[in-house]
Length: 354
Image 1 (cartoon, rainbow, N blue to C red):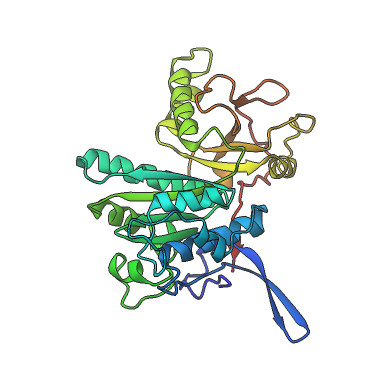
Image 2 (image 1 turned 90 degrees about the vertical axis):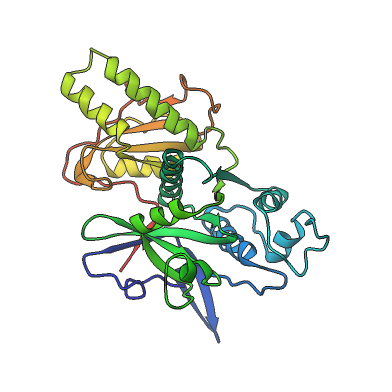
């Protein structure tokens, strides 16, 4: 599917950002190449929703990040036997079977499990965590799979509306959740769902929720560790009397209210981004392959005019290394400030479509 604003009924003032890969179509002796989302559909015999969604994600990770290609044959053959014996006809997959198949095909994913059988406060916290993981994944250009009520959907992007609220682009190979959970009158294969609607839907689910996010091999410092590091940093800043009161309060509020974006990024793309923003303090630095890039905002999240600084963490650090996982610039600074030149950008690994 080639994304366009008309399909999602977006206004001129709304922006559409999606994860895509270049796809070739051959018609006679002509080749047409365009950015698209690779949509696959289950056959309900060999493949069901989990196979189809995993194939979508695998296709993107192969073409966009050069991970090993996973064909549907490899995906099916890598699945551990089900409790009923044969895997064909398929009766569906557990997250454990998906994880086994991914590992068997030599690439990695982090699966987060959330139980909605707790008290209301814990459930609200769980949904907040799910949305943080989704935002970090898709804004890093990595699609994620959300499984609940015995079905799976793929989240592959978001819009930015006139009132600045995000709406998430979801793909549903059969349209089951689009009808049953998001109240569409027909089984569409892709819709946009508001942050409020998606959160409310997850809050109402009475059973378990799983989130699968592909992960690069050399990432050992997970997003959970980044969040813990930010909490510790907030505590440290609030007690540091060497920092002026205004700056101390601003940084503490940003961390407390989670007014930041957290992206996993290749160091080559990071250096290009810094160069475009006239930040030259990393030109001669040797950086790890993958870096957690934390973009902090004093105002509207995602607004270049509200960026007050960046923090970098070594994504290959030990998961419990809260002392040496910081990456400082050549001047030893932890918080890198943008150069004020009127051309600041936010880090974007999603493509914008008209």
